[in-house]
Amino acid sequence: MAGIEVLVGDLDRAIALWVDVLGFELVDSGPASHIEGRFAVVTDGRLAVTLLEPADAGPGTVLADRTPRLSQIVLTDPAPDAPAGRAVEAGLSVVPTADGFFLAPEVVAGALGPEVAVVVTGRP
Amino acid sequence: MSEGGVRRPSSGRPMPVRGSDVVPHLPPVPDELLADHERAHEQLAAAIGEAGRRDPAAVAVFTHLARRIVIESLAHLHPVLADPSSPLLVPPPRSNLTPLLLRRRHGAAEAFRHVDVRVAMVRHGHVAHPLERSTPEVLNALVQSGPGTGIADDVETNPGLVRATPTNWKPEANPIEHPPPEHCRPLLESAVDLVAHAPSPAVVRAGWLAFTINTIHPFVDGNGRTARACALAVAASGVSTAMEWGVLEQWNLARDEYVDALRAGQRAPVYAAEDVDALPFITHTVRSSARGARVSLARLEAVSSLVAALRRAGLDTPSTVAAGVVLADRFLPLAAVGRAVAPFVDEGAPDASAADGDEVAIRLAGNGVLAWIDTPAGSDPGTPRRSLAAGPALAALAAPYVAARGVDGR
Image: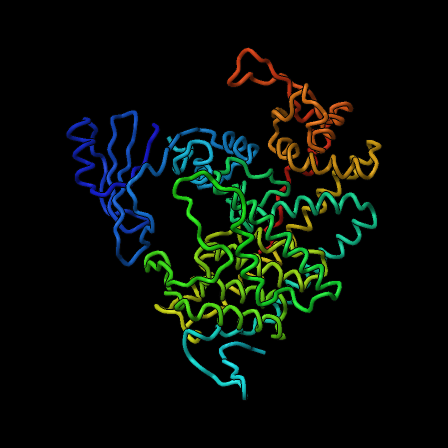
């Protein structure tokens, strides 16, 4: 399943849009794990949308740029080494992860314009 | 011996002071760390010397590659493969750069030239120190130089001028409030003076200076790049190679460690000399420089193998250097990932307009190192294109060593 991550200014309003209006199902929600804030995951079975509302204070990591935006495009690939190799070959910047890699927002901005990370994961 | 943390009045002995108008303390560093650093750089210097005696072309190609990597790191471009434990020996040049990042790379190249010249002048005895009091401002102006980006909000940020206003400090983004603007110039000058005269090893002074400039934040923009350029000049003055080829790449590869080491010494709400601690960043710098020297050594060995193979093909020295540069910049990375197809230059490109590297590449196609291939027409389907790609001969040439990664060295 492909996915996107969106930073939002108001998580409740975002959930209302995706669930009540667009018909997605809320499958997970709670405190964010890596930064201060809350998150929710909604899906229609084909697309998973992670909604992340970063907090402006807290004991953990506070995200410096909390501007609402599309922050990640998430692709699944059972063999992420292949696109990773092509990305290296093309002179992009590849950051390895536990189950794949991602292209940093500044790299994607050079091709697409907007700064959004592209995450490729081997997990289904 | 430690330094810093004192203000030297014009008329008397050093007088301990506290506050935001004094530079941080320059602490001692464990001897074993320095010994490892010295050993790594001595090995690299010896290997470069030996490689140069064997074939000067190898050193020329290595220098070209290392220079590109240092400039990209100085510009703080994300590395092609952000894996500090196993860096690519022959990374391709970074692509997909936004106009802003292209300007950063341009500015970094200009700053590197200045650093390179200053270090050479020190070696030849024309100047006493790698930095003068004005050098940070010069480097700040250079790192911000370059063509306009065409971006609407691309505003000027006073390149080369010490800031006259407080920084836009955000506690969630930076743990320490920077000193007031009226202290920036004296602090910067004190830092340069201390670096010039302190008896600590150059790599220690380089790390201290980078920490201090980052903590003082004396410019509106480009503080990190200026700090790295200044540190490079100081570090290079302490090694016997022409340039310090390791530390900037390692800082760039391990960005989290770089930031963590900075912040470990900035655990104070407001800048004051006695409340900040440069040691974590200095330690990180010494380790990074040693690790970088070992990666550079592996890189030199890979490039020497390539050059030896080109020599066996009968190329003279200028052609070997040119071919090595072209291969290192454009083709070896392809061989490294097992692909032999990449658009390069059009077959019909007029020689008069081709860059030197293009001309050499076209010649290499004549002996099978490169090969002409059909490439997708792209946006103009009516115009089939022929481009150069890595050929079978290159794949065979590169296979034994190009896929190799650098040493971990931690």
